[in-house]
Image (tube, rainbow, N blue to C red):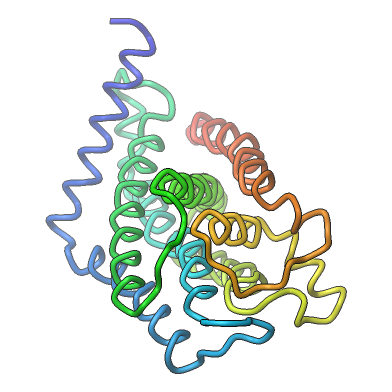
Length: 262
């Protein structure tokens, strides 16, 4: 078998290991699926009426919640990585004839599968509360692809930070930083309704670019047109930002993994 073939086989083995954990820890999986639904219902009904949003707020909110969900929920992945590090599991894997990074790729593949399921559940809840997409089915698939691309990028950022943190108790401190970044976006309110400096910062947030792009693909309005370069090129940034994040943090994560025992 070629080197690439061994790498794929090893990564699939590690993926099946992570999926097997779902059967033994179903509560963690359920919480991961329910949490974004709770956020959607809370902001849609309890704190509804986003500032600066014209028309049906759900048309604006639901795509923003999709993007927000792709950035949140990394704590489970980060804790799993740090637990493997501290229990010596990673050391045992490294002693085997296994492709470098297969453990990390397996972890990321399982997380992406869970993210796809979570996104489908959230789409179902959005449809149940009255949200609709108005574009073509191809545009719908394109929006789902952009959302999963954002998740893939945030995942490798989380894996790298988990290995830097090293211990599960430090993950909480790292995870706290994700919340301000998530809420400092256009998921709930338009940048035009914010102070100038804050609105400009929000528009350049990778999550805002994805949220704006998927709103366009879904045919959902409600937000201001936006005159900044970031607003006018949100579709481009929705691809460039995640690709740039992966290009930086994927090799950093793999290099740090290789150097764990050095």
